[in-house]
Image 1 (tube, one colour):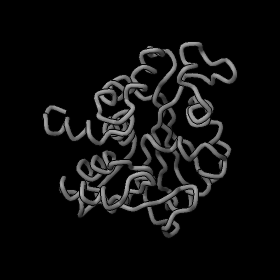
Image 2 (cartoon, one colour):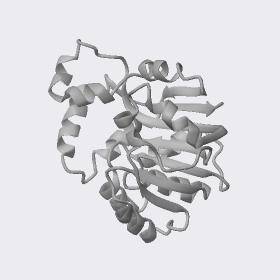
Image 3 (cartoon, helix red, strand yellow):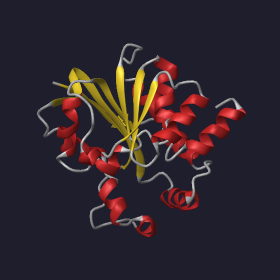
Image 4 (tube, helix red, strand yellow):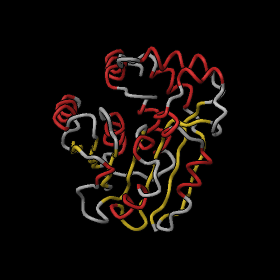
Length: 233
């Protein structure tokens, strides 16, 4: 972030609260190393993949539904990580094209809330991670469940899709702790929340103005970032 070229790259590739910041904080609670094979699920434009390959030298499968593998491949070549990052198109709700036990770590930043809000999703992903491996996610959340009592200042920004995907730490903990194939080893609000949101709001993402208005309205009272790490048993 001290380099103007890097800042421009971030502004052009962020798709939510700065995935580099989230990846940095989330991975600091994991023992990531160059010998690991990682599934970066919902990688977007690959900022989390960039962090995992550059920081740790890990081999990463960069999987996303919205961004094409060709687009990510060209980006990975331009930043010199194409030897470590494999771009692939997947829809997590329809199954993944990998062998059971293939990954040491399933890493997902800023994406899991879009597809992981059902009881069926987590158990469908667990088989792809080897026993003793980890599933780690970082996502936007709220400090408590609104239910039918959506705060007045949030009503202009609260629709059915937001209500489906944005939940509290307690909500996610309740969803994950019912799964017998994992052990939750860490769940917390993330420290990089304000910085990640502030940086996201400098991006060139189409429609960012509405997100800025939302954050100005909530003024730090409701939104947070949540991280959750589970060990596969």
